[in-house]
Length: 386
Image (cartoon, rainbow, N blue to C red; front, side):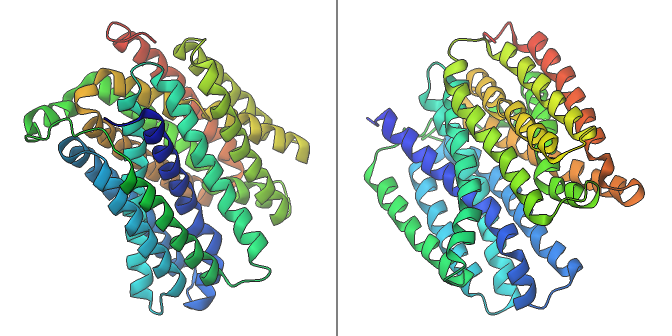
């Protein structure tokens, strides 16, 4: 028998590693550009390998988890991340660098999905609350890696820092080996027909398309906020980066609070309040006249976006508990597709009209989220309590 606290700790460690992984490439990209003498087009192609790898990993993890369980997945994925970090640190050719980035994304996609799925599986009640607490560790990892690089880069080159982080991951592998994980749900064989039928499930498609827009909204801030702040609000790069950190801080703190609030307040009410907060933050960005308004807006947006993934994944985990891994795979692939498409769409908009349209598109996406959460409530309220 596994111990629930040990599994939850393992999942938190895994999502912390995902947060570190997701932010690392952007943090060292200027150094990689200089080392490999890349132009903007080459850098863009290089960065695109990360989300491609994440989508591939997200597609794979669910059926594998349902068939074989989580233990070997956690172990192998962390080992792949270790190898990829060493590759990022010491790659002496562009091909090896490209392979390392793809492997990092692939491993990250698996660990992101597996951590959320296993927490859903071990949470008989309060799935959304536990997933919120788990999600806070993504924020800790995403905030911690740039801070670590900024502090240590004064004394060490980035390859030494990345290599050390990669080696430290071996400690997590030892922990994963030492503990017992839940057994596979379908150890005798994966029910392929049932898995395929999930693609026609209205409840799964509705919740997944909520995550399509949720992921797109979050990525608009992650990928475009600093450019918007520097180009349109004329803020220095240092202030723009600090503002983005405030957004991540608001997201992380709100998820920690949601771990308790979701046990006392209905998840639907939490979602409505969260989306209203996101609207308030978007309006603050749209009409921002000072740096303090910018910071307040981004913190509010971060708090508003905190509930989306934990609550919706909690719904999916409750409805499709017998094939939770596969259901989560479908949801994450659709969410990541939204991430890519909405970013691409804003790239076209910003090329024509400038990045000043960021708050407008953000508010439009949030409006879609409002419509979808009402539709989801109507569709799944007969299946689970929301």
